[in-house]
Image 1: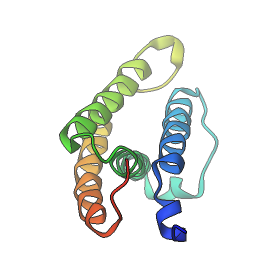
Image 2: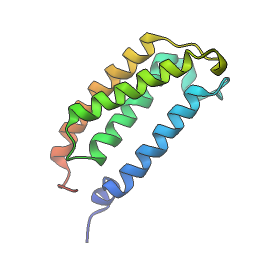
Image 3: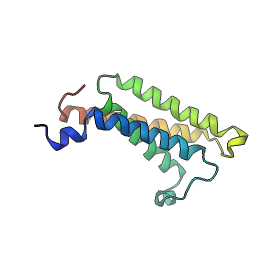
Length: 125
């Protein structure tokens, strides 16, 4: 019988959770007035970094056979897409290239952490 830790870090759990979080991040980024969150007091860049670090951890641990570089580049492109979409006047948001840089920095750190975690977790598909 698999341990609870093995079940928690199972791709069956992590992959749907990744897609849910990615959809949530995109939705929050494109809402004209996103709801206020407790983390708001730490600033916009902190929100970006937390969101993209979470996505990077979920993706890297959910798709362990995918190259980390591919995951990092894909998530960085997702962050760039969000900034591009926020530049559309009809969206009523402000695009900021520094947000994309914050996203990318968080992705790099989180994928490095995920690589270390992979060594502690049993191999899964």
